[in-house]
Length: 214
Image (cartoon, rainbow, N blue to C red; front, side, top):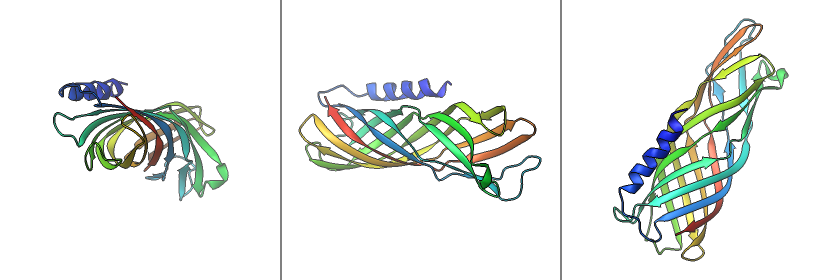
């Protein structure tokens, strides 16, 4: 899983290019809801009826964020690294296989690196922001009622977010954000037969919590 440390190293390298100043570091802790809008490109395999598809349930977990404000470059720019406690995503059959119920579960570790643009000045109480970056999703602890061996490919994709920071004082604040992430995974389930598909999770991620700036 080389992409995870690579993202962290890139974040540190880019952030270290700017001189550190008081107030340039922001740590956030909060809750994230992972709201999937999954679809497949078709499930193939012996005995699979036409119209077979899956849906993925929403999941909630804790989120941890570190943002380095790039003040020497611009008071409006920040480089953000996001990591959540891996939630368990559960998929159930839909369409012609809805009767199967839950067919798959997996944990997803999804570090994300974003470049944010904060509107207005640093002393503004309410500051909206937009971000663009890259997400890496690694699936683990994969289980299925349909097969004894299930493999899920990892995903790297574009991440977009919009959010707002509310400053209670110079150090403590509140934040809320919504993000759209591109996450696709090729699934190969091997048992009595072999089932294959690519799941496009199409998640919308809602986050909120507290921040501390130093």
